[in-house]
Length: 287
Image (cartoon, rainbow, N blue to C red; front, side, top):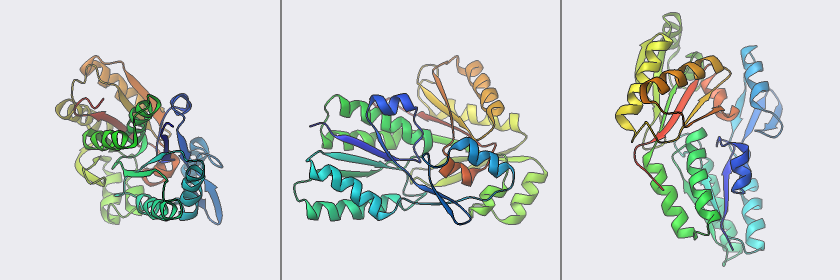
């Protein structure tokens, strides 16, 4: 029996690819005051970013233990192997919670095959890993091979980010209030990455959007393999114009048109804010 691939809603992946590789998505949760929404089911990106622009503050919470237990148990009961690809443990406690549920289900069903891996990735970076692993699973790869493949992908995926409003990084504890206020006043945009530990890290900054985009594109050329050919992903949070400008500059620099454009998942977009831009690539071939 083929291994079922599961991930969470911090993963951005085109819907047609989710269907093609039979990927199951477990939703994280978004809250507005006392109202709880399942990410991607009860509330969607356009609505969240519109409300954020109006001043609404959203909070997020990880997938609860019971959701993991019930999901893993359902596959254990029918004897189907399952591999959960978690978004970065450096950004959320989802991985640790999934591991607890994995342990408990396997104690209840000793013959169950349940894998749980920490991808150290998020958004379309996670989506790129899920697609590669999902394709291998569809071709019949076993659990051990799929885990090894996901770990290889995790070591070589790169995430780069910028945000338009530093207030959101301040709210998330990434900046102090004074730095956020001064940065916004001077139109300073930070250059952020997800580091090898899966944590968000600032590596530079620039005054003005275009200068920052040039910095990001140069970084891709310095750290990626064959940027003229490899597929990349670009995402935006309610700012299609900045994404299109980035893609235009990227195409000019590398003559690469293999680009997937998506919208940042709300569960992460609430921490980055409207106007955010992200891009993802590998530093060596992984398949």
